Amino acid sequence: MASRILPSALRALHQPTRLARTFRTSSHLLETPTAALPLRKPVGAFRGGMFGFLLGTTLAGAGTYYYILDEYRVSNELLTEDIYALQAAVQRLHNYISTLEEKVDAAQKKK
Image (tube, rainbow, N blue to C red; front, side, top):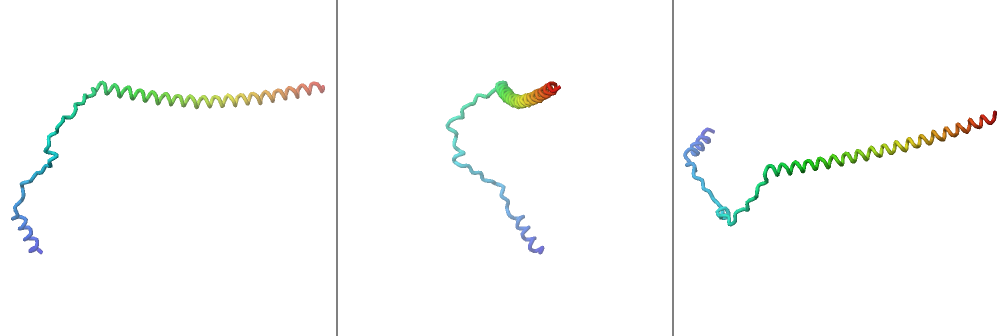
C-alpha cells in the first residue's frame, strides 16, 4: 500500500510547477470607446431631500384624508341609523299614549 502512495507523491514533487499565467482579452475589450457617456447633472441633496419630504408629506396627508373621510362616513351612517331608530321609538310611544288616552276617555264617559 505504501509502495503505491510513495511513488505518486514523489512524482508530484518532481513535476515543475506552472507559475506563469496567460491572460487573454477579447477584441471587444481592447476597443476604446468612441463616444464618452453624457455627464448627468447630479441632483443636490437639498433638492432630493425636499422632493422626498414633499412627496412623503403629500402621501401621508392623502392617506389621512381618506381615512378620516371613511371614518366620517361610517359614523354618519351609524348616527342616521340611530336617528331612525329613535324616530320609530317615538312613533310607537306616541301611538301607545294615544291609545291609553282613548281608553281613559272611554272609561270616563262610562261613569
